[in-house]
Image (cartoon, rainbow, N blue to C red; front, side):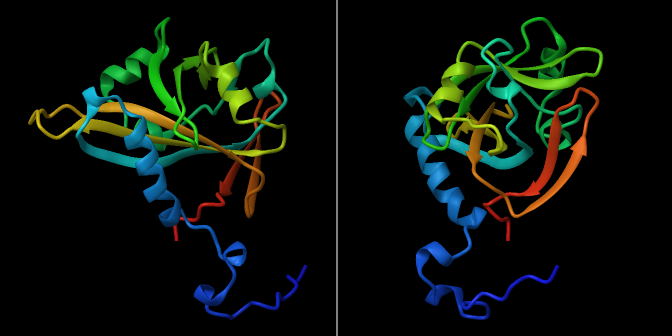
Length: 201
């Protein structure tokens, strides 16, 4: 089906009203960095670096993601972008009883103490923890919304340490994305590979 031409196609974006301009990840990143910096405790400042954030997963929010009984965000069997940021020790923690504890933020910089685990015979990643219900409520998760998961590392600039820093995550939910490729998984959940509303262009 041929896309209907919009009246502003071909016009320099800088001349368009703000609401007509494309939201880009490069526009979002500075604000996110400021929010993260403002929320970090003094013990972690000054920042050595915020490595990332890197978008590591996207999906459409399902009914089970909001279910108070299940109390978890189901991710995927493989998260290569996230795995590439993790240390060997962190990968081991994923599959032990306690899981990998991670400080997780939302788009407003609110923090949640959550745990990343890889459970079950299928080996799906899950985000769990006592704060998960608060994350859902604070951000008004709704079935059909799109969710982006970002990961980054935080360190200090005065230690001279070779430590990779603390792995943290950001969860951003939004109403829609421009491109979708639906992949059906064995447990009935639908996962999507999408271009986020925050374009990397």
